[in-house]
Amino acid sequence: MARRGHRSRLRNGVSAASVVLIVLVVFLFFRFGDKRTKEPVIGGAERRWSSFDASVKSRPTVEYRNGTDLIWQIPDSPKAVLFIAHGCNGRAANFWDRSSSCEGCVGLPEERLIVLEALSRGFAVLAVSSMGRCWTMGEERTVVGEIIEWWVVKNGLGKLPAFALGASSGGYFVSALATDLKFGAIVLMIAEGVFDQIDVLGDYPPTLFVHMPKDTRRKLKIEEFMVELKKKGIDVAEVKCMEFPLSPNTLADRIPGLGNDVSAELFKIFRREGFVDENGYMKKDGRAMQWKKVLDVENKATLLDKRLINHVQEELNLAFAFHEMTSLQSEQIFKWFESHVS
Ligand SMILES: *[C@@H]1O[C@H](CO)[C@@H](O)[C@H](O)[C@H]1NC(C)=O
Image (cartoon, rainbow, N blue to C red):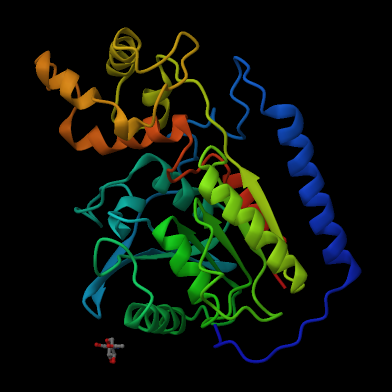
């Protein structure tokens, strides 16, 4: 992992053609795929929490440095490095399941699947917690940049291509960090980046926006920034994440430790309360729903293990598809990284 120098990279016809192809495929997919149908139109929504084979295990190392915690895992024969930045209120512990190697880990459903996907593809994964609730662009940027470089060297990963993925606040952070460190490509999830505040040169890494178009304000910003980045010769693409309907087993399918019976009971309550429409779609963002209150009022607090409340919340937000971490597009995300291994 090197600091960025003044590389002048030649854009060749092949990479331009592949960008056109990706954009075309994404366009066609959503042009014909985004009509509301009974079938979810997202890639991999059917993926269960348990769908990785036993060789891919959550076995992280937890370390403290520069006043924050870093959690990481390196697979056998790593082929690349992935730095992940969470969103506001997030932390590194959300990305790995609770285990003897990380008692404080939380294993949120989307975060854990991103990490398992990364490990299964040979990415060494490093997640760092922000010092405060959200990431900040001043000293924290320097500190985290140094942590990443130190960690890469310490673990003998300096020769591998490095990538970064940031969600929401982490997306803004990664978009800025990419001017300090040399990443092979980045993914900005539900974030337009801080392209109006940083100096983007021609060697800025290929950038994939994974966003939820229902969030119109961000969608418009992303459209604007994509045009600007393209003008500077930077590879850009987008993946649009659409809402999908819940079914009685969705929560059980996505959340380890949440049984089919609890999943079906919660779904029944959501339907009855009108949180979910007759086709299973969330009517509002999960955060705007008083679903926890309903459980309390009905003395159903014991129905759901308290430690899984945030897990359920995340899946409800995801189904509404306005602003949430998502692993459903992992295939596109990792293809983006893998197609930019130079
Ligand atoms: C981070 O911690 C290391 C080791 O304790 C220290 O050498 C380094 O100066 C710190 N970096 C910053 C920016 O504080």
